Image 1 (cartoon, rainbow, N blue to C red):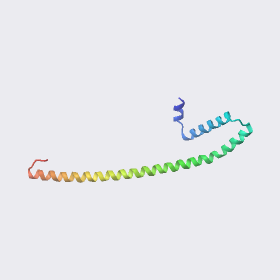
Image 2: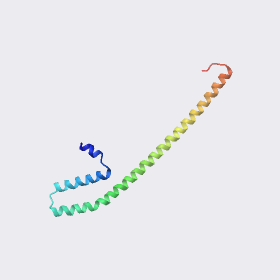
Image 3: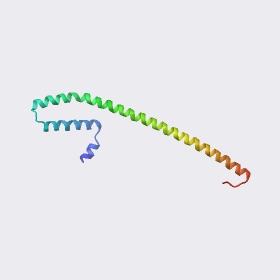
Image 4: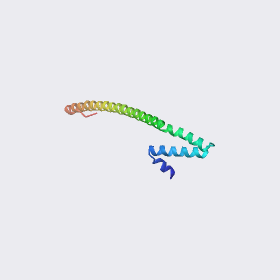
Length: 110
């Protein structure tokens, strides 16, 4: 059940859940006083927007790279298909010409 819930999380909700789990584990397992813990958490929380925007920037860069790769792969496949179709059309025309010659000469087709 928990696995299903985690798999259905959006990125934003997943990040929020991870932040909450991290904060809860820090509170439960730290040997520091409340004041020291609050100061440490404040320092870490202040860094969250910076890390989040770095993460988004990396995600955008990765997405653009994947799109560039997909575009070039699609272009390559399109060129290969076009070449194969041209070769097939040329071969069909040669065979059609052979068949016309055999039909006109009265011989059987091999």
